[in-house]
Image (cartoon, rainbow over all chains, first blue to last red; front, side, top):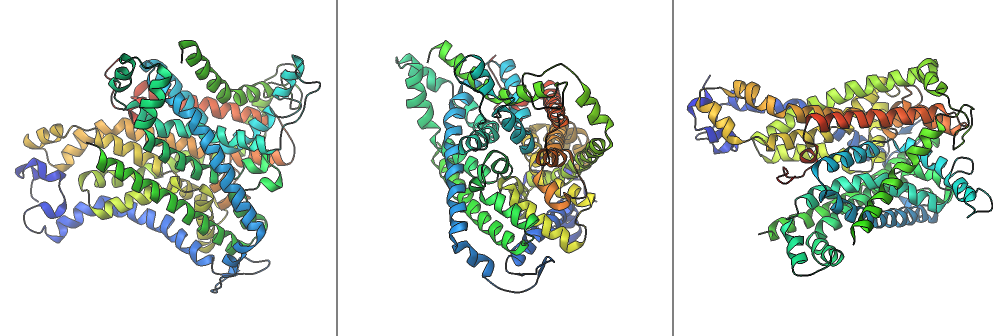
Length: 306
Length: 266
C-alpha cells in the first residue's frame, strides 16, 4: 500500500489520468469504490424505472389488468385528440401565468431580503423553508379553507361590510392560480436568493450616489444585471407548476385539470398505465428541453462573465 | 420606494404566506367538528385525536418510519457520490451527479409513475419498502446539493497540511473532511426528512392504498368530508418544519447553506 503522503499533495485533487503512469487496476478499483454504491442505487431505482416507463408507453393496455408487452403508437396517437390538446394548452397557460406573477413579486422580495441584516434574513429563511416544505395536500386544504364560505376571508369582508354575504371563491380559476403562486413562491425565493445575495452591493450604491432613486436603481441596475437569473427562475417555476397535481383537483373545476392530474387519473383510476406513461414521457421531454435551454443560457452567462 | 412602501410590500408578502396557516391553526382549535373561522370555542381535542385515534396514529407511524429511514438512505447515496465528484471531476461522476439532481427537477408525477411501473414489475407494489426506497431516490437531490456545498467550502490548504504531516487518505477523511462536512450532512438529512414527511404523490402512486402516510390520510379525509384533525396535522407539520430549520439555522450557517457567500457585513 503506497502512502499518499509521499505524493505531491495536490495530486489528490486531480483527474485519475493526471497521475504519472497508469495506476494499477486494484488502486483504480479502490478509488472508484465510493462511486459503486450510488451508481447501483441510482441505476436500479431511477434509470431502470424510467426505462420501464418508456417501454410501457408503447405497451398495450389490458382491461382489468395492467398491460401486456407490445409495440404500438396508439397511446401517443391519443395526443392528437382535442381533449388532450385542451388540457395541454391549459397546463401551459396557467403554469406560465403563475410563474410570471410569482417571479415579479418574489424577485423584489428576495432583493429586499438580501439587503436585510443577518438575523432578519435567517428568520425569514426559516419561515420560507417551512412554507416550502408544506405538503401540496396541506396547501390545497389551507387555501380551500381560506377561500371557503364558512371559514374564509369573505367572512372578514362581510364583517366589515364590503360583501352583502359570505361567498365561496373555490373551486375556480382564480383559486387555482393563487394556490399555484403560493406553492412556488418559497421555491422561487430560494432559487433567486444565491444570485441576489452575491450581487455586489457597490453596484446599487454607485447608482444611488449618482442620484438614481431606489426604484430606478432596482429597475435599471439590479434587474438588467440579473436578467439571466430571472429567466432561469421563470423556467424553473414554469416546470414546477406543471408538476402540481393536487391543487387543480381541490381548487379547480374539472376543466382546470392539468396534464399532471390527467396522468395520475389515468394511472390510478382508469388503470391505463400505458397512456399515462406516454403522457409522462411527453411531459418529461417538454421539461428536459426547457431545462436544457436554461442550462445553455446559464453557461453562456459563465462564458460572458469577466 | 420609500422605507414605508418597502416594509408594506414585505408585510403583504408575509401575510400572503402566513394567511392560510393562520386559518388552519384557527380551524384546528374549533370545539365543534366544523370548518369554521374564527373558531367557536377553543379545544385541543383534535390534537389529542391525532395521537390517540388508531387510524391517524398508524399514518403518523408510517410517515415517521418512512421519513427517518428514507432520509438516511438518501444521505448514504448522496455522500459517497458528492465526495467522489469533489475528489475526481470526471465525466461519469458528473453524469451520475446530474442524474441525482433529476428527480427534483422534473415534475414529480413523472418520477412517481416511473416508480409505480417499477414496483409493479418487481412485485413490491403496495409495500412500505417501495415507498421508502422511492422517497430516498426522489429526495437524494437535497443531501447531494448540501453535501457538495460543504465539500466545496473546505479549504484545500487544510487537507494539504494534514497530508504533509503524514496523514493517509483515510485519516484525512476522518479527521479533516468529515468534521467539516458534518453540518451539511445533517442539514441534507433534515431537508430530506421534512420533505419526505410532506410528500404525497410518490407515496400515493407506489403504495397509496396500503401504506397510508399522513398526507395521504389528509387527502382521503378531505375527499370524504371534513375533520378538524387534518388541520391539526397541518399545524404539527408546520411546527416540525420551523423547529428543524430553526435548529439548522441555530447550529449552522443557513444563508451560506442556501448559496449566499459568507456574509462580511453585519
